[in-house]
Amino acid sequence: MHPPPAALKKFLKPYDPEVRDLALKLRSLVLEEMAPCYENIYDAYSAVAIGYDSIFHIAVYSKHVNLGFNEGATLEDPKGILTGDGACIRHITIENVEDLQRPEIRSYIRRARKKALADAKKLGEKTKKPDRVVSTVKAIYPKKRRPK
Image (cartoon, rainbow, N blue to C red):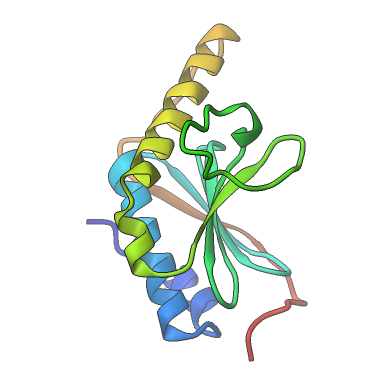
């Protein structure tokens, strides 16, 4: 399928095995829905983050993983499961591997992707799609707040 890049595995190393596993399983699920796509990996201050085509992202925290939707405030939320109160981003908190079996996870990913493509088309933007998953390490911050 799409093995995780070495940099991602290194960034996830400080996390408990359960959280690492959860992050990598969510990444696999996302790539099943998105590939081929651009994957941007950030070793940020408060989380490891992985962005996908500026549509959504995975944020890895010490006890859970969030699936964030970059335009979530404008995304239909028929199940009422998106959380957050910012101007744009909403997310779904994933606390265990059972959460990944929820059908609405894939449904929301598909809906967000479809909306992003429609919005880009309305604006006349051309969406260049790669022929594979292109993973890029975008930022490495020297100071980090990570699990010990």
